[in-house]
Length: 115
Length: 113
View 1 (tube, rainbow over the protein chains, first blue to last red):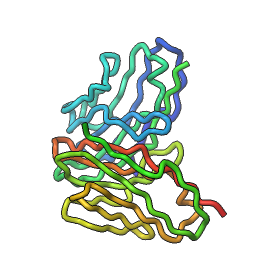
View 2 (cartoon, each protein chain N blue to C red):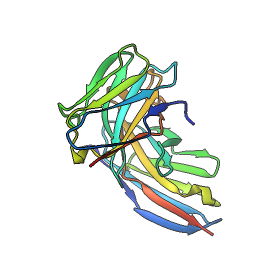
View 3 (tube, rainbow over the protein chains, first blue to last red):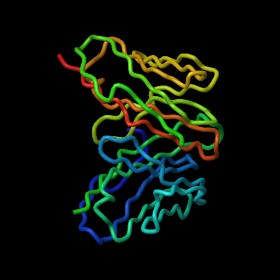
View 4 (tube, rainbow over the protein chains, first blue to last red):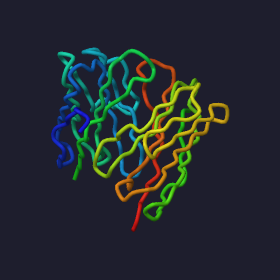
């Protein structure tokens, strides 16, 4: 257990529905990252926050995706009008900013299945 | 485009044997290279982090090497155990802001009796 928690661990939804995932980082970490991992592939960067500011978003993050970190602690990732291609593992990681070798600690992930 | 390639894609070895996993990358400018272990259905866990100036780093039975000139890295596992069965992912970070990580697709290792 790295100290990063994600909820729910599994989500099955029908195409067109909205889903929201939550990530609770290690409490003193000011950076929070979201990644997406499809079967047999490595994780791909989606977005990251430093405190409450969203500093970068990947082109993978379409308009249907939105992430927030309102108080600089937990974060939510919402997917609107889900599509079957959104089925993946969504991973959250947190780290302390301050140097290029800051360790990123990953949560267990939320596995999304869109039927 | 930043890329990280790993080989082999999968590997089966007997318990107690050693193995070496390979990684080639094209991430530039380069900051550091990491090896992660990911158990099925879990998040990745860091094994080693190496910067440009480091050639080798060990973590128990795991030893990583880095050749920044040829942009290659390897992860050597000695005296393998059944619990080593997992995906091993090579990850490279550039010098851009945010320490965003570029992941390889991983080597799926299975250790058998």
